Image: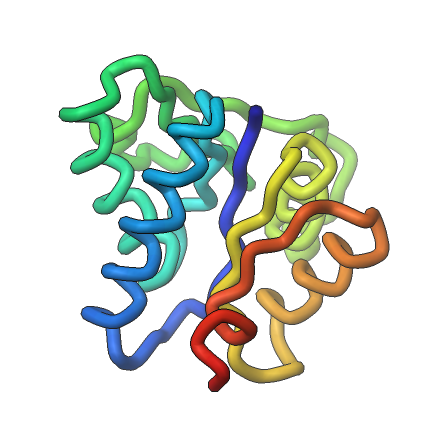
Length: 145
């Protein structure tokens, strides 16, 4: 099972979100999730990667995959097991992240979302996941915020 994440670049109540992510990712791993696609930008992505690094100590079989929006950026990829670059060669640079996000949704079975307002890139990505009828685990829905 492949899982990806969708959330805002800035978050509040990070401790609450971290606890939620810890529980959600553990449940997914116990249900057979092995591959986690991460975007690597913003606070939610960083938090998700951090929680998964914790989980990897208990579940060494999981794979953390950084999905690159750009090539040759000199990014530090040391906290990930691997990287992947979707077919974005012909996408204008300003659209690279949105196209990368769509690829992540299409490649995942489950989308873990922390989207608290209806504008911006995270909200657009969540709408894409809904259109593609992906299984969505939503912080907003579960926490009633």
